[in-house]
Structure formats: structure tokens, C-alpha cells
Image (cartoon, rainbow, N blue to C red; front, side, top):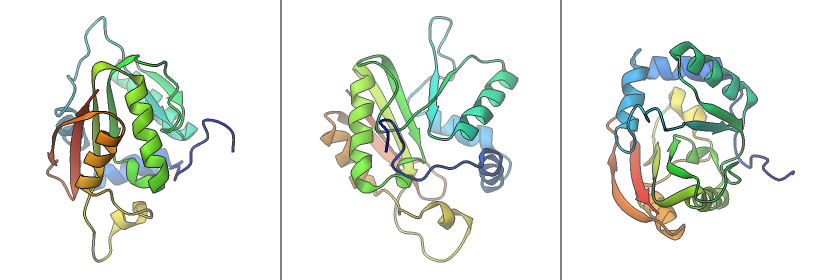
Amino acid sequence: MSPGSPRGAVIHQAAGYDMLLWLLTFGRERRFRQKMLSFAAKEVVGVAGSVAGIDASPEMIARARTKAARAGVTVDFRQGSADALPFADARLDAVLSTAMLHHLPTTVRASALYEMRRVLKPGGRALLIDFAGHRNGKGPLLHFHRRGHVEPKVLEELVSSAGMRVVQSGPVGRWSLQYVLGAR
């Protein structure tokens, strides 16, 4: 495995993933994403601000570039892995991980949190949103939970173990999504 190679599930069907999210949010994907962002970041970073996004899948990066161009926003998209972020030390004000950690093996989750801390400026924030609890029964979401869920207490422990302070945590309000906001 080469450095920076992802060590978890990589979703390559970008259009299918977007369609699934659209169906699961009953067509209110934008409102759902705004709710998640409201925990840590302003919608607009301003003229002097910049936004970057990473994903291990080139298909997801291509889809994100298309969506950003359509929205008329400038985003620096890079292919990369959560446990080897392609950013310099203390470079970012905020890091957002949305429903991604459950795709990683347990050992890689800790590496990903250390990377988030590494790239954050002092005082920077990390927002983790992921599925928590155990789901019973069947349904389309179970396909994406091969590695399980990330319990809220485990999310908090990951943040603390990486050397960040847990600022706030709780339910997002959809399905079993929970968030933890940490600060460096």
C-alpha cells in the first residue's frame, strides 16, 4: 500500500451516493447539509477564506468539482486519505468529517483524528458527524455500515485521544447521526 492510500471503504459511485442521500432526505439534501454545517462553520468563508475538500475516490472528487462549479464556488478538491491529509501542519481553521468514519477500520479512525489535529491551527475546530448506535432490521443504510457505527462516546474519546478538547456533542436529528465538535 502506497503512502496516502485509503485504508477503508472507498465509494466510487458518486452519482449513486448523491441519489441515495437525496432519497433519504426526501429531496431536502441541501437543508440536511446546512444543518450539519451549522454546528461548526459559516456557510460562507468570505473573500479572504478558502475551502478545501478531500476524498479517496476520484469519482467523488469529480462529482464535487462539478457541483461546486454549478454553484459558482471555488473549492480546492484533492484526492487523499483521511489518515494522510494533504495539508501542511496547522494550516486549517476547521475540519469537517461527515458520515465517513464508519467506513474506516477502527485502528485507522484514530490516525484520521491525529491528522485532523495536525492540520488544524491552534484554536481550530474539528466537526465529526457519523452514525451512532446499532441499527436493527434491514434497509438501504445498512449497506453503508459494513464496519458498524461509531458510538458517540467513542467519537468523544477519539477527539480527546488526538489531543483536542470536546466542545460539544449530541444528536444531529436525522436517523442515528451524532456530532462531536472538538477544538485544538
